[in-house]
Image 1 (tube, rainbow, N blue to C red):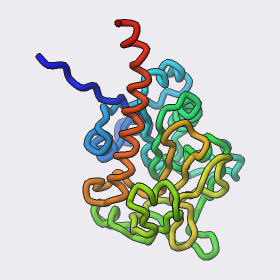
Image 2: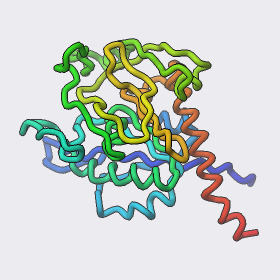
Image 3: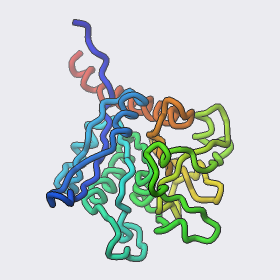
Image 4: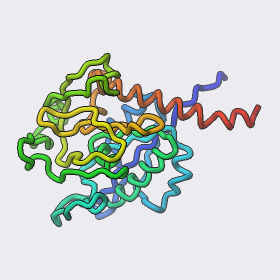
Length: 265
């Protein structure tokens, strides 16, 4: 039997939310992220449970070739970035916060590619020292970026606003130097002050930060505010992002496996 080509192992931290019917907690991630890692990046997806410090972060990061941070209903709690307290009825996911924020820092330090989407861009920014706006739509001059109510999945994820990419920037380079495109929008929070070392790669029509990149990273470390996991085979920038992330994960895998091959030889 011919040897199979190995695939880079891509960790996807999950949400931990309560099942209201049974009162139990469930660890879950949307199918589109998992499919995009498999089809768009050529990776082997592995769901990472939201167990916080029960996980051995160093051991986990040593095994990973990349990490994709998904969207989620809950917002990053403000005590992680010095923001004002949430209202009591705000949906939170402290288990995910306790899992993802340390993992981002560990991955960046170890040179593991990180791709954050929606909540994921916010997690990258907060983990590395940035802050968030709690409610973008109440800021002067900003549009309502939140999910459309009473709409189908396809309607919610349809393009909603224009995007301006940094001229000469990384995202622009992925699509042949283009500086304009249209993306979906399903978020309430947004990036406020970017973390040290971050470059703003794209903004919405109203100036809201839509993409960041860690310029000082050893490898791919990009966050986007829109849902790039949606139809990467049809949207040029979505597909290009997952492809570039996959290439970085392949390079990480080759580097990680090199000492093992040398030992066998």
